[in-house]
Length: 348
Image (cartoon, rainbow, N blue to C red):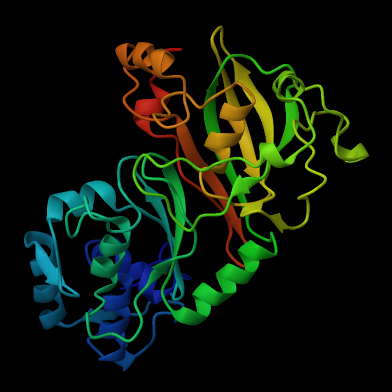
C-alpha cells in the first residue's frame, strides 16, 4: 500500500527502487502488458501514485527480474558480462527519450578493431535497453567523449531525440563543463583559447588532431605567452591566445574554428585545476588547446608532456586528468557526474 512518503511518485520510478536491475524500457513494456496494476487497473509509467493505493506486481515479472540479477545475458545479439556491466554502466538521469550516463575512464564510447565485443559504452546501452539486432534503429550517443576521459555523456533512445539533441548541440544550447588538471600555472585566471583544429569524424589510436596555426599571421612565441589581445570587450578580463581572422566563422583548408573558455579553480605548485567550458566541440579540443599554450593536460599520452606524465604515474595517476563534469540540457536541467575517486584522492 502506498504511504505518504511514496505518494506523488511516478509509477515507473517507484518500481525502479524495487527492481534496480531491470532496464526502464523493460519496465515500460511490463506496464503495457498489464503485469503491474494500481488498484486492479492498468496504468502507464507516467501515472502519479496516491496515498492508500495498492500496487500489484505479477509473479511472472518477479521471476523475470530475479533472472536478470543472477545471469549474464545476451540481449540484442551482444553478450555482456554482468560484472563488467555493473562496474562500467552508471545512469545519472533517464526518461522515455534519453539516458545521461557517467562513463568511466578507459571505456571506449564505440566499438573498434582492438575493443572486444560487448566492451564499449554504446553496446552496454543496447544491452540495458534490450535492443534487438533486427531493430531498424539502435540507440546512439549524441556526442563524443575520448576513451581516457571520464564523465557525462548522453545517449538518445530514438532517432527523433538524436536529431533534437544534434540541433541543440549545434545551436550551443547545451552547456558542457569539464574539470582538467594542467601542467604549470596560467598567467591569466580566466580566458579563452581560439585555435582552429583539423576536422575529423574520428581518429585512429595514436593519431593526432592538427591545429591550423600555419594558416595564421601570428608569432607562436606570442601565442604561447598569451600576449594576443582579447577577441572582444567581453573577454577583457581574460586572454584569447589566438585570433584566427582567416578562419573565424568558417572553414579553411580542412580546419574549423575551435573555442575553449576556462577559469582557474585551484592552483598547486606544479599544476592548475581548471573549469573548462567548450563553445565548440571539436575532437580532442581541450587536450590540443592546452597543449598548444604550453599547459598540457596531466596524464595525456598523446599531446602531453611525457616525462612529466611518468613522474605523475609514480604519484599514482594512472589516467588522464580530464573529467566531463556537468551538462545542462534544455528540458532536463543540469546533470553532474561526481569526480572519480582516483582523481579525487590524487596527492598534488
